[in-house]
Image (cartoon, rainbow, N blue to C red):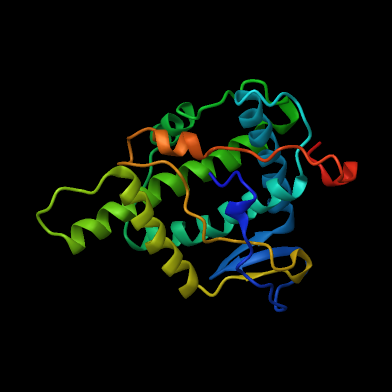
Length: 222
């Protein structure tokens, strides 16, 4: 889960061929501004939960960080889903649910009116992480027949490179209103086979930025 400013460095420039209401396109997949807004709302709650688990209290967090993370996951997720369909990879609801149960923070305190947004973006994170690990396993077995699999984190990184290459082939575009800020090239944490829980490395990577008191209220997570 990309939960730090450094992990959201800008690499994908906006293009001008999108229609009104579209935040991005990845191949034939359209990510609408409404989708991004809902996912951003959900990520705000994830950031708050992660911050609370790390002893950060209830300090406000920049809305931009949640938006960057949400956009990253939606854009990369579209490419991962496309590649998974081409390779007949599937995930069961129980595998996604198990990944979510292994998160190093509690989502029980999410406000009822935001629960759906949180659930959707968390499931997107789970799909990205689990499918990326499976893509890494397939790539390793193809390149190293008969050898023992790499450690889970290495498989995750290998799968991320596969997903990023596929994303580039899909010619992603972003709405210029967001500027050069969306970065779909961040690997997701988590590791192992489709049934393996979130790794210790992933848990350690779930850090959040500190509060930014200089920003106006409308630029902070509500």
